[in-house]
Length: 352
Length: 259
Image (cartoon, rainbow over all chains, first blue to last red; front, side, top):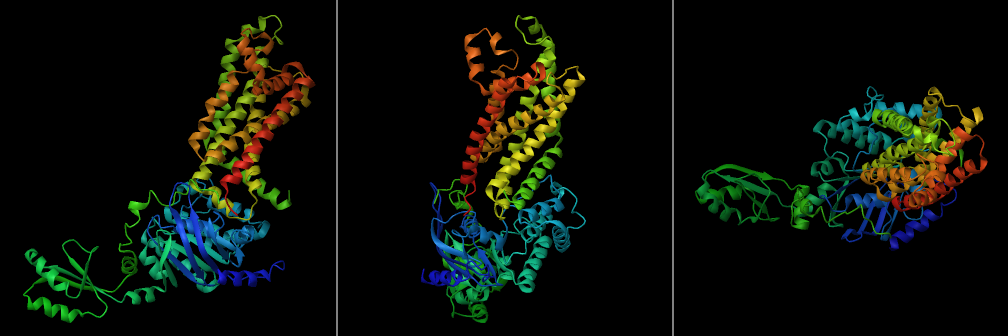
């Protein structure tokens, strides 16, 4: 709270002169409760620095979209405070909306309008008219590779094309901060990679601050400068992907016995080096090594001493899934599925 | 309203019109269905003109008022189903994320719907003229008729927008279709109120606001400048618009929780 007060007083000095403010995002104790539901967001503190790509990683129903809705002013917080681009999301909603662009979870497009018509409408809603509107639309269509499809109705677009148009629409007014809510969900690898390239370019070349929610480990790992891992509405870990992985500092050894009857013996040997874990290939035994306990050579020697024959032996470096596992006791993949129905009941909000 | 807000309203209205125009079912049905009902009624009920006190010798002229009201209802249902779909798909959220004022979103929706209803009215009027109907109020009456249709469409549109914003459900808005039609059939659409024999039906038709809308249109067609009837029609349309708009604005405020 103290930090927020300082920030507020700093930005407050600029009020009235419309001076550019810092492109940062800050939240303190952000909470959102829904009627008859759990706390979708349960006291989030975060800070995203200007020009940074912040990956907000978590399973379905963890509270990612609710957080984005609050930070983009679509949903008032039940408690806590947040500033986006130096503006209070509750008290200065219109100013926040001018400063941000957002592509929400569903690429909400009108199937009966063309891509160009979408851009024309979006620019008009942002008060951009005339020649500037046409130039900006053409520029964005070119940038997202939709020039040829610009005059086709959106109902004929592929999922990747819709996502690219969605991104273009979020950029029409040259926002300083961009919110992307699961932008690559459902996209093929090629479309996903293309979107990553464009998002990376926006941050590096144009200095746009990007707040990106995802349930894909690889996306957060590749794209984000820093990652916040959210589960049950709370941030359970935060840092650079490298630091998060280094903090748990333990690789996983995966072994497949050559003789299935030796499975018990393999488990017995590997458990000397760490705790058994799940989520690897069928028939394999995986053990997450404790930080300083053993290396691959020692493990091979121990297995050999027991006369165990393996058909496969691999060592996996820590991933963000391991970080999630370490922090929550569950794997990220599928973690939210069983809870999805009770979490994020956004259609029935309680008035704040 | 600022110039920017006007431009934004026009852009949203245009989008509503374009979206409707690109869905043939939403264009053809509201044009054809009222004309079919008009033809059936004009053929089947023309003996009514023999009733003592019936206001005209042409049942076609008498019945022509109905498509205007029915067309406004159909335009309302179609446009507000699309409005509810905007809520379901998140398109409304996309617009809410821009600096556009909430009221502009509602004006844009209403503007598009009214434009469609007026275009339909021109079609109904052309069909009526083609079938030999002559407006007793003359050419100026045709202009007044379109103005009245604008008000009627605005009344239904604001009520339909309230339903769309309140429920956010395409199914719920479609569910209004039979409700609106009950009001239509329990009005003076097929017979003047003073000639309705069943007391309960005459009472229902008298308290039913749709009767006054139909009678105002009908007056321009078969009577001429009957200011009392026409004024009552405008007043009812204005009352419904005010009520519907107040409800829709409140629902919009609840729907758009944005800060």
